[in-house]
Image (cartoon, rainbow, N blue to C red):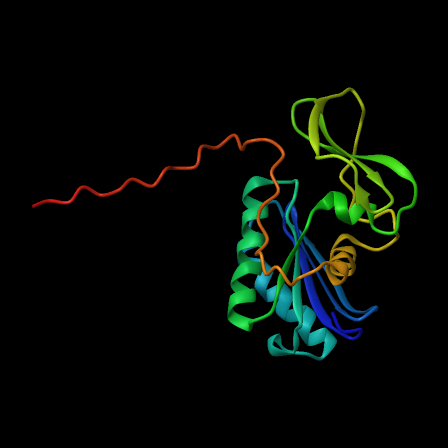
Length: 198
């Protein structure tokens, strides 16, 4: 990606809408709205506000970065589907970044990163610097773990998403997909082939 590439990054994987706009390393906008619901209605207007603050429009963007989880099932689907739609409409890559990848950005040495899960469990993944050493897993734990918004690197989550997105290879053009470590509690309805009447 070119050094001054403009990348819009956002996250709705928990009870907020969070958006950042970067041009290279310059943070042009970094915004967050707390909300338990309504992310689908607020995400695009917040993106537009970020673009206005940076003095750019949608067609000036070079890429979209989006947090793919882990997190709230519906929230992840909102942001990922929005990123994919914008990618198609604008003809630019959409780059999926997991929350673990964001947490590992700028880190050095081996460590296990942990995130809260439901019902006394945690999600964890082993990293050596920024490189994952294992798949993420869910385990039972008494450890009290909080979900960070300010990443270990010192940037907020959406700014870190943009930085990680800038480093990723986009040549494969594979669209981002939700990153689920466990199956959702809600059952996704199966599509039924309609019966043809003669």
